[in-house]
Length: 474
Image (cartoon, rainbow, N blue to C red; front, side, top):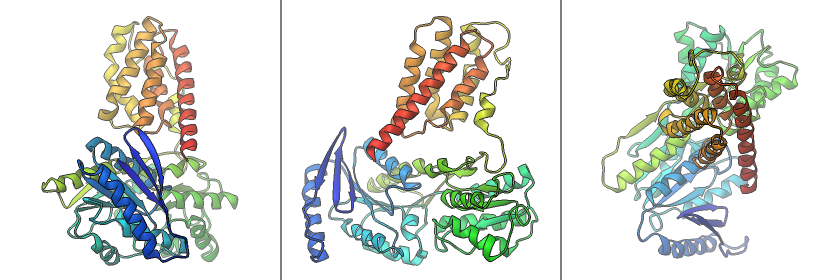
């Protein structure tokens, strides 16, 4: 059973079916205590039907619809299905947020308690926003009777599953310094009390020291909210009179959304990105796709983070010992906003490689199967072990189709693309997968180009179906 409490409507989904349940609520003008009592009553009634034979876990977080939440909460949902446990999601808002409506959403956190939950995953860094560690810890005292796991922000006495923002930012800056020769960086800081924002800023300071570059305070903004990319550029360009290309080579932001709005502001003022100034983000979020040129960023394993948090919480419930801190690695994703060429276009460029050697036929292609599949996994931005079965089936069907046309290649490819979408992976890089397959097989048969063209159409159609389904769900 998966439930999402959003505002005052509860959508209950169990296995393959979805049952909307609208809670009968008191009028807005009546006391909050009456409204809360009604919801608790309905919640307890529903949970009595579904929780008897499996644990019921909760997830506290600040937003259902933006940024990393679009990856993290589906990962918890998938983990709940995998472990056959109930999951109730409580998407409230940032604690003590400036927006009055967002503060009202915080009321949903009062519904999470030991009355309906056996354990709790809290995305503490998303809740914190403008709060310091002590205030965030104080907020969680209300749940102290429950086993808990924290996402991102470490809290004493609570296991934490974090991602390595620090080394990710260090690697990004190393790419800009060593790969492009940049030496002057305008740095857009995030919220003062946000753990990850501070880690990325610390990495910036340490990178300057490592590469013996001076720290110019005029190039660093004051701490800003996540949505303040445009404001950051106004601070740098208007308040401080700095000029891109003259005073700084690159803008380094602590989030993709900050970077996107910084880039839009620069472009609106006539600056070319990356010709005049490079721009980089952080998170490799869905919003990154809004950027032109495509945004160089750091990918954080949010899906793995959510899944691991569920595993750790269930280990706690089973009485097993768990580590106090688990840190997952990050990686730089190089795109065009830093000045690098498009990797997708480079992959699609036809250059006979001779990788299959002399001769034709299935036997020789089978010899390069492992190497080709490995490169396809890299192009798809998938973990090799997770994607091995998918990519091997595509490769094998392609080779078989070259030898004996049967239309099974396209059927296999479409089935794999459907599995990729169902597993919450993105199809955006699958044209790169097809490009890799083409490079490895281009000199094997005159039928290669026909199959490759068909495969590109199949991928594009799958992308369109996925987008249409996403819009329908919204």
